[in-house]
Length: 552
Image (cartoon, rainbow, N blue to C red):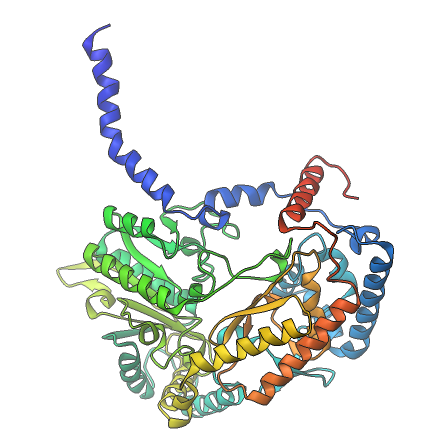
C-alpha cells in the first residue's frame, strides 16, 4: 500500500477531531432524561402505543384486593353522580362547547395518565365554565364557589379584584380611541418610562402574547450576533413555537436549538467553546424543578414527582451564566412571561440580582389584558442597520399597543408603585416558606402522603409513596371546593393577596380530600411496590399493546 492510502483517512480523522470533540461536549451537556434529548423523545412519542384500561381492570390495576377495588368503584361512582348533580349546568355547556372547541378536547384528554383517560372522560366529567370571580374565588354556572388555585395560568398575581379594576380603568382610558391602531395612545409614553425603570433596560417593544415576545427576542439576538443557534435548558417552557419547543408537541424536527442541562458546568463549557450560539433563554420558574418538564397529573404514571428550590444555588448559577454570556458575546434572555412581577416588583432580575440583555414579560403586565413585552439594550432592540437599509429585523403586529391593552398596562404599572402593592412583596420568602411548612406538617399529622414544594407563591405537590391513582386527588379537591387548572396538582398558583384565613381554608379542604382518598382506597399500596416496579409493569403493558395484545 502507498503512503497516500494511509495519509488520506488519517488526515480526514485529524480534520474531524475538533468537530467530534464539540459533539461529545454537547452530548455531555445534555440531561440524561428524555426531556434533555429532543430527537429521542420525539421518536419515543411516535412509538408509544395508545391503550386504555377496561372497566374490569380500572379499579385494581395495581393488584388491589377485591374489597379495596369495590371501595374505589363505589367512591368513583358516588363522585361521578355528585358531579352530575352539583355541576349540571356547567357540565352541559362544557359538553356542548367541547364538540367545537379543540382546546377543550385536548385538555380533557390529558388530565390523567392516558391509560385511565377514556374511562374518566366518560364517567367523571369536569366543567370548563365559570360565571363570576371575586376575591380568591370563582363561581360556576350552578352557583358553586371554589377557592381558586389556578392563578389564571400566572396572570393573577394580586387577586382578581385588582385586575378587574385595572381592566375597567384600561377600557375607560382607551375608549376615546377605541380600535384606532398604528397611532399610539398617550399613556404608551408613560408605560415605556415605567417599563424602563422596572426592567433596567433601555428600550421596549409591545406584542400580543408572551410567545410572540420570546419569538422577537430570539430573532433580535440572531440578527445582531449573526449566529443562528439558541440554547434553552432542559424542561423549560418558552411558548409553543418551534425553536423553543423542540420535542414532542412540535411537528418539526429539532434544528437550531440546543437543550442543555440547567445548573451544570458542562453547559457553561459548551457556551464557552462554541461560536454559533446567538442567545441563551432562561425561564426562572425552572428554579423550582430544574431539568424537569412542567409537572402535570397526566404524567403521574407511577406517582413520582419531585421539585425543590434553592435560592442561593440558583442565584449563583445565573451569576456564572451571566459572566459566560458576557465573555462570549451571547445574548442572555430572561423569559419572565410567567414569573414577571411575582417574585419582586422588578421581576427575576431584581430578585436574583442578575441583569439580562433582553427580558420578556406577559400575563400580568397589562392588568388582565393579553400582551407581550420585550425590554432590552438599545443596541439589541434596533431592527435595522443604517449602513445597510435593506437589512431589517422585521416585527410588527396589528394589535400591538392596542389602546385598551395599553390603558390596562398603565393602570397596572401605576398600581405597582403604590404602598399597598409594595407591601405585598415584603418578607415574601419567609411568608410562603412558613405556609409550605404548615401545609407539609398538616399533611404528615393526618398521615396523608402529600408534600408541597414551592417557589414563593407557585407550588407543586409531590407524593411520598408510589401509586397508580394519585391523579384522583384533583377530582376530590374540586368536590371540596378547590379550583385547579387542567394540570391538576402539578401546579398551584396562589395570589400574593391570599389571606391567612383563606390559606387555612385551603388547608382544611386538602385534608378533607386526602381523607376521602384514604377512605376510598386510592392510596392503598401493595407490599413491595416501588416506582420501579410500577414502571416495569407499565412497560410490559406498552410492549403488549405494541404487539397488538389486549391489556387485561
